[in-house]
Image (cartoon, rainbow, N blue to C red; front, side, top):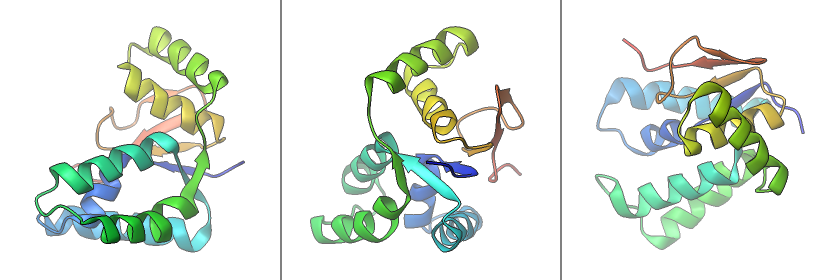
Length: 141
């Protein structure tokens, strides 16, 4: 398992939601490139958060068939990091060392476990380095 880029949940939400055209276009490019190159990945947590948000909290919620289609064509092809005891232990270490919330630490731990050098996320500090990982916010103005 080795990808260069780990994509956080918010990218997929913007990919699904065209309310903000600029963020939607950025997300569209990230997802398209990730699928085309095979050089991007996500974890089980991103799948769960995306489906939860897209089916319950989104401006226009996806119905079951649309959610399943998105999962099968976009999320599952990028899924490389499953849940494991080792991942949870690493997340706790990341949380303690870097003072992230547990869920953010779990995303960072998954990106590190996948061997990624870049984490694309709107939720963390742009440019921050966590071991071999650099956080990149493509949505910043």
